[in-house]
Length: 463
Image (cartoon, rainbow, N blue to C red; front, side, top):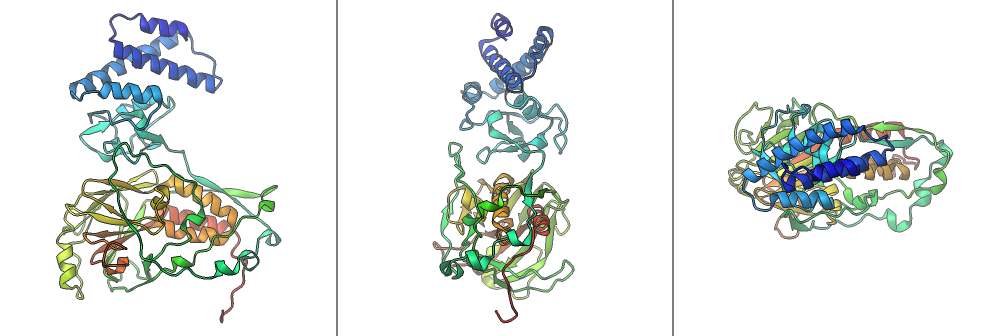
């Protein structure tokens, strides 16, 4: 390695900044070999790899300097040297030849992530952006961020281990629940917050567990018994999230378990969206199959990439609802990136989101309603967080897993918010809102529940 670094430093035709970035690349590659106990490459092979890396780095430096953004190269050096995600975006024109699935090797983000982070990275599908990067390649902007520390590696697949226990090993809910846990928590008005998403703000994820969703106060869910052909309007009913009680795990169950791994399998349609006006469901469900979907206030009835609310009719529509609908405008854009979901407000007016898993990740109250201002993007579901919560719930029992259904449902209102800061205390008091069901996580829960034994506590027709 010393001889390779020496040859890099002695290249007088290479600018100092390219030399420094190339040294970081060589150092990283050597670290990877040492960590994986691989034999060092031959000197000739290493020299050839360095020539290729040097060419790519020169092209990157040229593109960044051409953008005339002061400090961008220094920011890139700082990000790589200190492995610091709290650095700014380093953007270049989006000249990638990658297809929608990110499979082509000419994708610049993939190339530069290979140089300084993951040399075995194969395509863009193995990456997801950090929350605070507004220029990630996944968003399709004219200029894309190539800061390798603004991306995270996505596992090849998500899965949880589900133990299969004999009946006598399952705890009885009536034995382990205290009297205080049996009482339902009285409903409360959701708290409110606003997400500004400055690039310096790095969310710190606390330990996630099923207990974190033990009280989704005032979280109402419409009764979704309509089929897709039924145009009738449906009234909303409470979801009773205040009655959630996690089941404590039993350490004696851990050793010598038998079971199986249950993977997450993303369906072709990754979510379905229902539209409501106050407590009345309007129109048919929209099923999203594209990775980017816009919910707006316009009138296209047949776009696969847009759910247009403007053309939906409701004979019970009031003047207040009609007025609010006019301000939906460009609405909100949803990005589905390897199981994670981001929401970007495109409208001139804010949208309001209630996402239990996001509230936990950002250390907010579980029922918090978050205001997303115009041109701000928020991650509203994260597969890594959900996998952690699900794995913990599996150890606690069937009931804990079943209750995670609430984490797979996201509610979003347009123009008007609800909660403690507003006159509207529940989402069913807002004039226009949607409920998003995430099909992949829901199907995953279904597979896990099918593998586990059912609840062990008894129930009677008069209880």
